[in-house]
Image 1 (cartoon, one colour):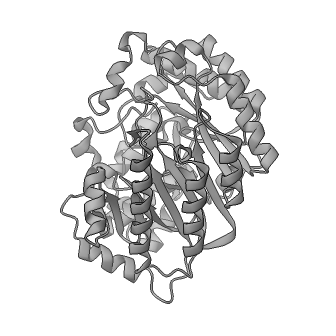
Image 2: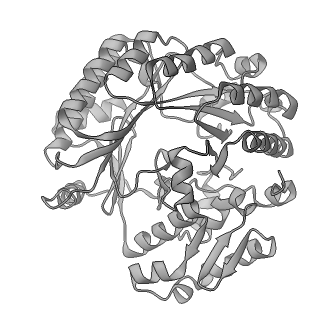
Length: 458
């Protein structure tokens, strides 16, 4: 790929946030005032509020442990435990509905995990119907669900489709059996192809497949085989994630043989190969780790400068408040972020007492709102217009961000961005280090970068 420069990427491959929010989750506070959070929910749900809603439900259960996983999961096949969790999830939703303006349209809905299809079809039907009865879905709402092909049945998929889901996402990671064994996720190619065919037979709008580079025993030639197979399967979207090996944060990753991990240089070579193959096959590099076909909504939003980011990554969902339910899920609306409890005991206890199960959160200051806008513009538009920010926030951009702009000189010298009359644009090769550029405007990063909270940017 002509814009790919491994030496440049080596230089900038440092720990940094993914900016699914700003400030990022490590800055959330445990002394978050519950009463003020309720006030903000009520304020943003007044009678005049007609902005759209985005809804997320976290289903944490999985059948087996994937050694690479960085998600918040519970490995359990205890059906009573699963059923109890679903009951409390419903109670949490009903608690929130006492404050929500349910006339607001839901234009994005997502089930994540864990493995939402760890629920049996009857549980999926019951929970989704419960939600459908309580929220006002827009006719063209994006409704997506993460699945696991292992243990999945056609009845699972039929139930998802019949209750309104129209997009499917699932992990492949790598087709190589040696890699699959090393990460404890055995998923034959034939199974992946069968499930993708089910999505076509049932009329789902889109399927996204996840790949991970940097896993044990991976190399360029072997991973190229997996990329070729993915291209042949022809999903609408592909996510190509960098494996974050953080055993000090995710203890189960110690089950991975560290000596079998590719070197930092080989990881970048794998990344280069994958990007080249995918873009040559007609996929558009949306940014960071997302690829989509030319006619996909993400690609169109990128071209029209309407791309957004939230806790699910890049999205077309502009202007929506995000309400998230379930363990560890994070809501975002108005000036607030709020994250739920991590353990079932704390989560159940709060709901039993009639409280929203908030563990920590954050109320944004004026400076936070300003920096959030700047960082999200950089992450989504790959350019920045100073006048737009100045008009919205009534500042002199060059004065306010003097120290931040000085940090951009290294990117300018490496031809990763260019300054314009009233802003700057990221070059094509600069898009690969977009997180590093955004960091220049992050007021918290210098305080947090030594804490081990972030994965490397590439």
